[in-house]
Image 1 (cartoon, one colour):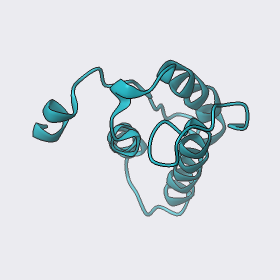
Image 2 (cartoon, helix red, strand yellow):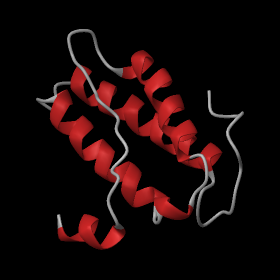
Image 3 (spheres, one colour):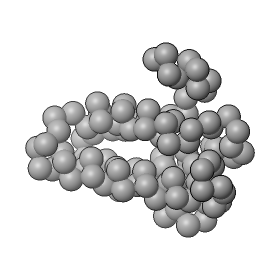
Image 4 (cartoon, rainbow, N blue to C red):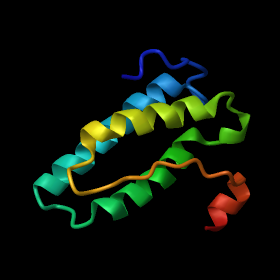
Length: 101
């Protein structure tokens, strides 16, 4: 699913590794919902967006970040349970403003 994404620096912009990690997270959210360990997939998805931003560390330095988001939006359909949604979106904010939120 993520193998065709670029493998950048281990510390930043390694979209292949980041995508693989995030797909694992989505899978775990689905499993937790199936096991009734979480009550709101939408709430988990909201935090998932923050996790993406946090993992990227400084997304403004990454080229073609939209490719990562496009791939995540493609693969999420496998992991988002029927009747639920998960909008994966790019936060176009600086790290300073992100940390304030």
